[in-house]
Length: 180
Image (cartoon, rainbow, N blue to C red):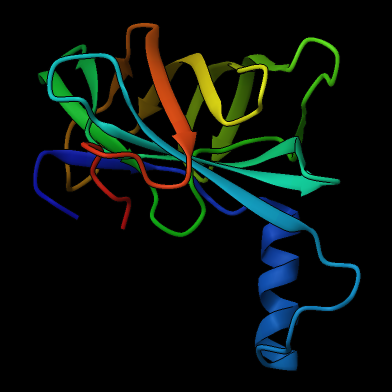
């Protein structure tokens, strides 16, 4: 973790359960019932173009649910430390309540004012998106408010991002930074 940055994101119960099952069973090959995954890579439309990565489950060639959201260097404004950035945690991504269903008719999804608690860190987030007609491009918005308790990395404070727009395409797009 870089100095001056804080990470949000923790594994949900389902992720912890699946990680425990994989750890005990070993990394078994994918079963017949596993779902295909489509990754959309892009960036937020803000100075510095912080990268964003969105993973969706795919059925019959179309994204059906958003599974994970990862981002780096998201600009936030904190009460005491001022301008700062934070990242979703590398393994689990931003906290989502589970798969976010994609409306097939409107090609869109929405997660509004989702409250999360991760240990001593609390917050809310709003995450929306709409796919293009051919399901290859994705546009949307993301906004987060996170309350950090006082610890060795900084004082107790609340950090808020503006409502940021993002653009992403299926696979790796030219000019975007790869996610770790």
